[in-house]
Length: 127
Image 1 (cartoon, helix red, strand yellow):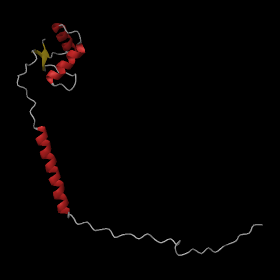
Image 2 (cartoon, one colour; image 1 turned 180 degrees about the horizontal axis):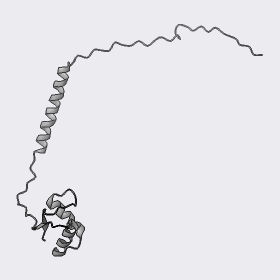
Image 3 (cartoon, helix red, strand yellow; image 1 turned 90 degrees about the vertical axis):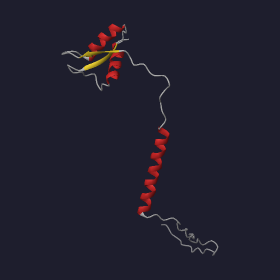
């Protein structure tokens, strides 16, 4: 059988835990209304836009004029493919890589894909 004993513990006043005293926080001196917050936001956006315009306004022009790539016009016929046109152009220029020629033709004509339509005019490099 077990027994349990209870002892009364008395703490001296120095050992009694006291609740922490919180100092009153100083209220903020700046209070913005909704209109003030919107104004600050719009002012920040305007400054960011002005900074972007100022930093992005530099000219990328050079003093020497550029020379365009020598090209010839080719009209796509029925059954023609971009690969076939690029293979003919690569053979005519002496360049053996047809894939590189396909990439050049796509860049010259701003093509998003390798699909061409009958009757379409393409610029093909001649060098």
